[in-house]
Amino acid sequence: MLDSTDMRILDELSKNSRITMKELGEKVHLTGQAASARVAKLEDNGVIEGYTIKVSHIKLGFFIHAMIHIYTKSAYHEPYLSYIKTQEAYIMNNYKISGESCYLLECKFPSNEELDKFLKGLNNYVNYKLTIVINK
Image (cartoon, rainbow, N blue to C red; front, side, top):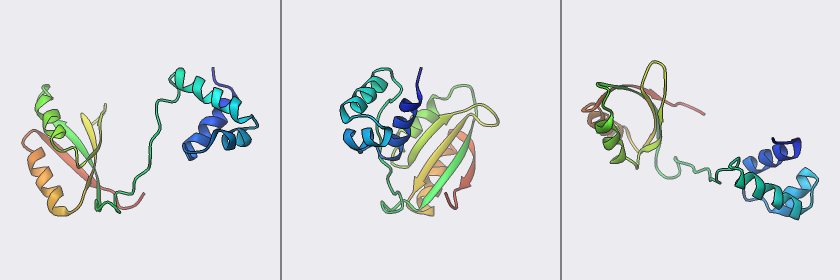
């Protein structure tokens, strides 16, 4: 479905999604108009689902990056999912996974005190195993 030019376009956009179509075309040996048409086709076909930014959580005051394996206490997950919705400020990703645990939460916290408060609330709904990210 995708040719090598499409793959190069995706690679360039993943490095810098704000690149102009003219610059993109130069990098993949197309005109800006041809690059734009290719990108539009990739978007229309659902290959490109959207564009994002990378944010420094540390500069926003979130110094603790945690991965939390979630073990539900029952097959009914709604109480846990409802609690997570109330904690959106801390939740980066909530992955439903297979394997040892049911979910993998990726979170950010401004302090150990906020992390502890979050974990105490979380423990009302599920069991968990906490891992702190030291370096990326």
